[in-house]
Image 1 (tube, one colour):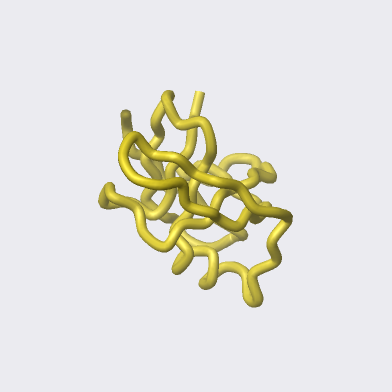
Image 2: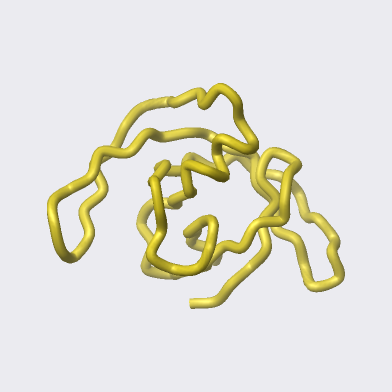
Length: 98
């Protein structure tokens, strides 16, 4: 796992945990509310962690791009994120980056 900086809908950058084991990108609801008002959902999904009951999460499509160490932005791509109230790690997004 590593951290990368992502711009979301031309805002940010935001701290993103890049985890090769992530099956679904996840974004904090507070971040989505900052970049998309009102939130436009494209569906819902049930998220299941190792412990506890599944949680129903909204799905949103967001334009994201990576920001490198020198602050350069790379090409923006659409990514569908599950929206969660909170994340356990100290980050704004979870994303599988290469």
